[in-house]
Image (cartoon, rainbow, N blue to C red; front, side, top):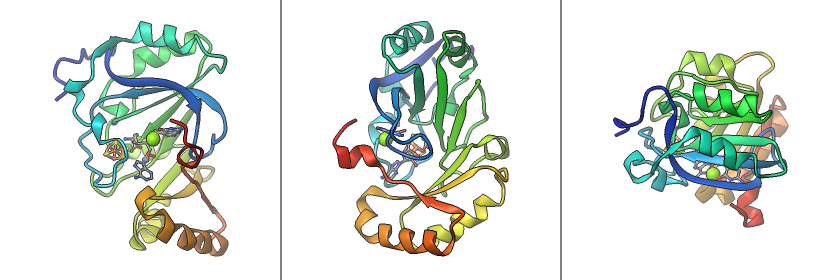
Length: 207
Ligand SMILES: C[S@@+](CC[C@H](N)C(=O)[O-])C[C@H]1O[C@@H](n2cnc3c(N)ncnc32)[C@H](O)[C@@H]1O
Ligand SMILES: Nc1nc2[nH]cc(C(=O)O)c2c(=O)[nH]1
Ligand code: SF4
Ligand SMILES: [Mg+2]
């Protein structure tokens, strides 16, 4: 799938870049430049960006050019997402962003080895391909998607493997939000170490 992507991370399959507001999790509400890399084989049936899955549909793009684009926006913060960004060696891209004075946040399922330099890691683990220990221990936030009732216990099972200061979020799966949000509200009231995360950009109709 990602065969032609050079292992040194100087070129990466870029699906899209956009300047918006971080809609989810700990940094909700902050302006950030989003870099969405193509390629994912985790296979979440409810994934809201399935167009990202096939890396070959997304042009190999110079990491230096991505950094230049990121610098053209007032907020010196980027979110690297996908697809599954940790499919690739992110050392080069994050090093260049860091040298340019940009704060770097990651959105990942944690299914692949952690590479790169990060100011914040949002780990959203998946049943379909579980998270690795290196990503669990580096996560600043654990953001579990709630698609059905069994996901509360699944969230607790994974919370055992993150650091004591890792933030814990429950986020309704978008197509089930009407059904799951009230359950999450009750769960957070009963278990206040968890907080609710909403996909606020979808309510705001922004990217
Ligand atoms: C599209 S994923 C890309 C990054 C990485 N592959 C991952 O899953 O974390 C970005 C974020 O959107 C969340 N997400 C994807 N589809 C969703 C949906 N239908 N409802 C709620 N959250 C969703 C993921 O769990 C993840 O936190
Ligand atoms: N506004 C906005 N915030 C986001 N936070 C994480 C996203 C993602 O798809 O990784 C996302 C996204 O797609 N849009
Ligand atoms: S891991 Fe992320 S990009 Fe991959 S299918 Fe799941 S939600 Fe979509
Ligand atoms: Mg999204």
